[in-house]
Length: 297
Image 1 (tube, rainbow, N blue to C red):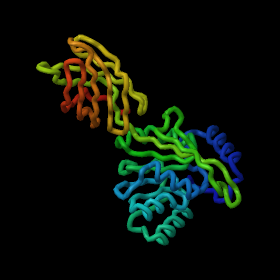
Image 2: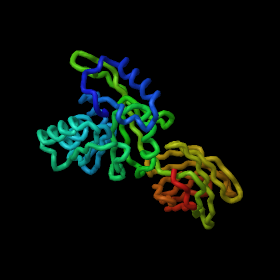
Image 3: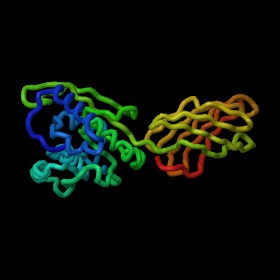
Image 4: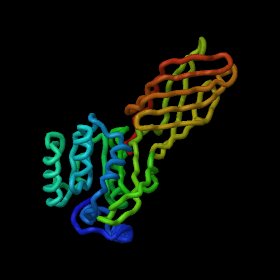
């Protein structure tokens, strides 16, 4: 986590004091105020597990400290990546740790402001920062490639609720002989799907034109669909990265027909499979939807 102070911490009261201090500072001044508190190895292991980190990932650790997250991922899975930290002593320590682990061909460490770091190559981002720093980073994280996994130790991102959360009882959380609880949060960057989509689907001998309107709050989606002069509510919607699933039932003129749509969103297009089931209709077909371009979030 972060940079600077390298002494042992007495416990959660210390973290509470840091949070209070962070709240009193201007948001953009946060990174230099983030202290160095190492992430316990058992928390590192859980972070990598929750992020489903593997050989094909590219991991960026923000406030990388002694580099243990990046080094562990490289040594265990062959994961490539890098860490950034403002403290040159931490960078030297990270490079030494990577060399000792034999992974210098996979990882790098940079003395760099995390706010000025290009994150676009990441498939996984890990961090142990402070709440205000997380919130300032949040718009940049939401604009990363859909499906990018964000894993945070101890601190969340306010009303962007995590896709998964774990609580761990940790030995030596604050140093030898101490113990405490750690939280690990996982978010999967959702594709931006809000707006009006148009598509067509065959139903028996007829092809119907659909207008689907979606509202979105992070990974939470709701909406309505209009077809054959009728409007129905989307009763179930799930967004996981670029993957989307929609379920709604609407009368197409010969009784209610359930629609189960799955697909992947890419810019202003969705493509996938549609299953229709009703008293007189049972069919599956490819489907694709388009929408007018929307402004970036």
